[in-house]
Image (cartoon, rainbow, N blue to C red; front, top):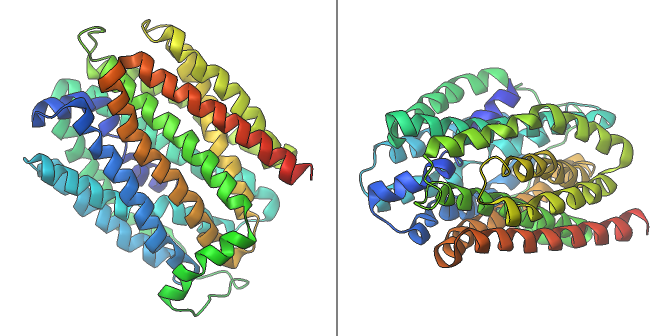
Length: 383
């Protein structure tokens, strides 16, 4: 049930990916300007996580989750009914600020499972997030092509209302007996982030790797949404959605690779995944103008991209339970700052240099991810 909830609340940020060209046409804005919709959403999400997620180490995860799913419902409803671009951007930004539930749930669950099950359970929740992204990007393209892009957000509002009602009934009111809640002030919780990070410096490396990794994902799909619907390629937004369906492979591969990370260790698994992903991303440079060949790099990126996130989270969720949420805060803030900057960078680069520029940006970032993954492995795993 929590995995399904994670899917719905995560999906909200990704409906715009395949339909970005249609939204830009409707509001009569440029490719560069439409990039601020996902960019502001991701940056607001990073800010919301920084300011709100640390509360998970003090207050009930159930209470916080209930409050913020209602906030998401109101925000996405604003996007559905707005007729002004500024109002649409405002709704998207508020939506991002309220989207902390997918990042509360791993900590909530990690306090209720044995350590040896952590990789499998984290992968299961990550699979829910992947499924939400998959449904959002695949479904939005098809629905928008035949019923208009606003229908996508009408459906999303109905799904969020359902989650807002059912999620509090699903989550356990009780805290585990081994869990002690720190009775510290809000400002003390926020102020503790820097000292905690300095005592656990690997969170910065994992956060930076995930920022780049997530940024690659965002920029590639922003570019594909504009590239495939351009006059040069001539496809509809439904085709972008059909390509997004390829992410269904993650439902099978991510839990298996999460279990592999339990056996091999998160750092070694991350290094392996980064190498395969670099190879896959490089193929976008050569296959970008053939729809069928594009399936190959998309599949490779879909298989190994989520593993980077699972293994990054594992390096954090093995720490003391009382500080996991705050360490996860630092990690997720890095991730969504990377996603926000990449959203704007991806559409801007596409506006200036087209698909070759967008693909080159992704390959360059992938080289850095592999280098950082190798450094982290030899620094922390091999001493």
